[in-house]
Length: 273
Image (cartoon, rainbow, N blue to C red; front, side):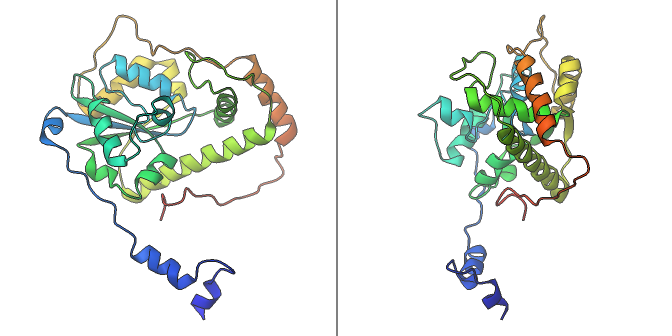
């Protein structure tokens, strides 16, 4: 009776769905080659969501010898480098080599949605040597959603890139971006809580206010000494301008509804089980 009740109309029978879940291939642990492993001291995973200031933090970390936290598991790597491998195992080795600084620190920037895809085939925490976790968020979530919407329109994700199309206000797209950011944050928070993993929590606003103090915290987490340059910069400029402010005002005039409190259930498939 239960299986019959669960059987989706015109879809996969419940028995088959249960069988697929029970006999799904287990995620594998990658054995790191000794020549790569010998050059690694510690790893830093920046667990975050889009437009959280992660590109800015990545530039700062690279300048301080704290690895190169790029999207080694898909994302921008696939867009910018057509020859970049699609296999998560090959991507892992790229992270441990190209993402490693001379100090022996490798770093990875990871969105929850990217981790969910990798986790289908690869046991990432068990495969990464000596990982440490940084949880990067942005206090101004609406500002983050506006920034992400604008970046996806213009294809300009960093200040050094050129806009392909002019930005145009789209309240629905901003609302969708906000929901997706909330979903990413919820997935990360649930994952850390479920696994009892310690992490260093930083916000974009903290890093903007005092980048040196933020890097010192990351260095202490990794138990390494940062390399200080005379001029501490990420190589990027703030892209936020009056357009973002105008979009915020218009969005709030159209979507703000304090008396209403609607709750939606979201999940990144395969991430929280």
